[in-house]
Image (cartoon, rainbow, N blue to C red):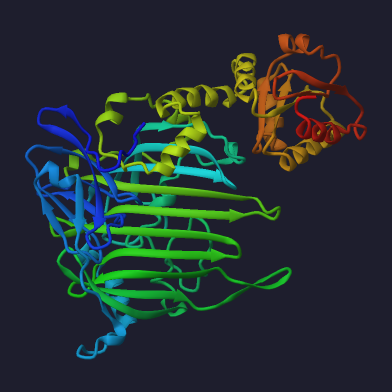
Length: 549
């Protein structure tokens, strides 16, 4: 596990002449961290980015030169390991709009229009491969629930020749390295296994809505700035510098609007942000945006740097928060940081964002994680690792995650073994409601199980429902499970068969039979009843409120 030791430089040898260097970027005048600074190896497409605390790690070949740039600061070129320990960037002078009286009038909407129309001339419009480091964590309210890190490759068949409507529409995506914690969030089973396309959509340059008049939706949506230009207002804010070039800072905001619903008109999602655009070539080098919909928020950032006279993205960030009707909330944070760009046609591959099953086939490679350029963890993120794994390393957590996912996948195979594994994972964490049923499950039985699904939603933080079928016909079992959506979030399905040892263990005579296992995996209640007479909710409440009884 990576930890930052203040003002201490860690150098580990990773090969002939190569070192992994760690340092920090700060404001020379204030000493405050400079987040999301571009740190690129001169003469190559390799690089990294500073985190929220200004810290970074970078694998370099010795000797080297590193260029450090950030909007609003003068760039530095550094060729010494010692000088990378603490990089002090000098703030550039910023000319505010209200004090510029000698310039010709700046039309902010015209600047943005030219930036959007100049994409093909400012960004690479030929095929290329970009290698990224991916980090993703979530929390329910204040409790962190999962952490994922990965090495991600994106092949862009057309480069930035034209904007796209969806991430992954004209790109290939693959994951080559992976490590992650167990997913302890409320929405664990409903979570996307990995959200690469989600964070790629932060790329304002690469993705735009095509249809004019489309209002911005909230989650996982791309920008409609080009198509619905007249829905926005633009304001010239200031002029600064980036990488030796003068930059316009243009603020934008969506005009107030409303949406007709069954309950009347409601306020439409609102969007506001800031674009940093070069004054000569009209290239977008930075975008920061906030989208709100009621109490829900989505913050998106995109940063670009030049390589071979073309701009490429080097850091995407998405922070989203959903607030539910019961007052609870779910927050996610996703980052994608560029590590290298390659243009050899031989690098081309064909693959889409991997499924959960495909991710489980990726082995943990400790050599890679010890030697690769990755986004430096902050003390907060180190705490997340501690919270999720009790101090256990991500590599160990990943091995447990693989075993856990195996235990809840394809319940038609090795069902009893997987159930016992899942029960062990749930111990000291969740109450299990076991539902024993068979192929004779009639309408009244189905209605009873629908009531069980309602209980699971009501107590999803503490309860998992485990469906155990004795149906001897696997195809019929699958048909029923999918027909009635018994693979819903928080429900695990196993087909244990007619001669299951579990039926003997729990002394099952009739179906449906409902058994509550407390967090110690001990039987709290066994009940086989007629439909409508079951009252498990009161028993569950007692168990949640008095777990030791």
